[in-house]
Image (cartoon, rainbow over all chains, first blue to last red):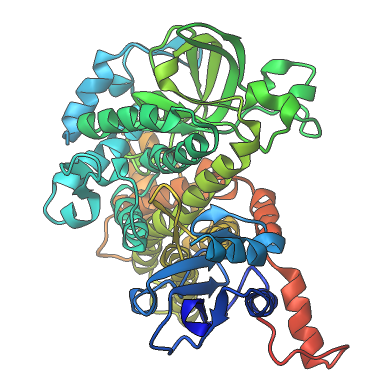
Length: 104
Length: 485
């Protein structure tokens, strides 16, 4: 049942000079979201997004803009080795994001 | 906010233990060795009250909403970070010297964020204690120093491995009402003419170093606190009745530095902001270092503006200003100075928010800024000396210029173009001498950390693995990703 799933989208900052491997983390997140029964990956342009995961390569967090956050009910901001300003090692970022998605 | 004169009065009201050249100093506000440094710091108060600079040097407290001096502000946007650089440049232009107040300002911002993180992690109460201090600093417009660098003893050993445990400031006793600390802090800019010190640890630490993981505030006149003021190039000129020979008589050649001794100094708990949390020392060191290294493309560029002006004016007096190679060198000096400014502006624009809500500059770019300062300022000085000529190092003193027997010869042979008095050339040469020939330059090398400290930070942030992947994709080595992100 698509309607009961959490609609998740990924939005990248632009990847000018990332401190973390955004492609790898993005790929891990896509795979993990597909595996989870209660999560559904949608386009950032979708009309219905529950959680926007904003993937930024460094703490400057250029992707963390009001216009992007406004597309979803809530957002999770990865910015270098932090998630929502809390330090997280690069290797743990995708697992931590999935955990946050499922706890919402 | 207080005025420059009120700052001077506040210095006269405290009685810190300060020594210089074997003399116990009664009042730094009135002693010739200290007056230029006091004047430079006083300008941070005076310019804040001048309408021309008010927009740069005042702001609103995020704690009380009241108007405060910018040097007591916690940065809450990249706009604030950029403004700091502009304020430092403006002050550097007016003083031609170090005004010392940025160090404590940077320490306030670093400790603000780290105490917040510590409390979140360990349920401590450091941040609220720190906010109480910050409110007092803002309300009284206090000039405090930031004291980080320890003497370090044997650099190959950690703090706890030193044969002399006092080579790093450490806790010697924990009491019901506070802690007792011992050790020293070296090269502390503005320590002699500040009202208090915000003391921070200086290097990454392990569990064995826990007693060295200590951060606190101490007023300058706390019992057991001793300041020994450092010598500077030509500092005897400040005390020998010379005016022209001092170069920058009003503000000196660079900030005044002190060795601060902590001889079993008691610190009440209300002024303790870290006590044993060795695993958070790196964050504090990095945030303070980043904030301070961000500055150098501001203040040093302001000084360079004055130096370039002095060099250009001297070239006019010496009749060389229109020579193509002189103009080329002046262009190069300007190019180097503005490159440093670009670095400071860039690391500020790329700054980011910390969990406590305040902003810090981009660490990689801030370290690049300071590393460039260790090179460009020397090259700017070299070009100034090149244009100035050998007279920079050989000119007779103003005492001989005033002499009834030989003064006329000094005047005759120091004179440059016919319509400018010899005194003008003497004043410009002495200003350039002070700005390029001694202690001032070393400050550009080691202030805010030595070049190797910046290189270590740059190495940590360089992300060579990603750069390698970029190259491998282009050279078609191994599996090719569509993009490297």
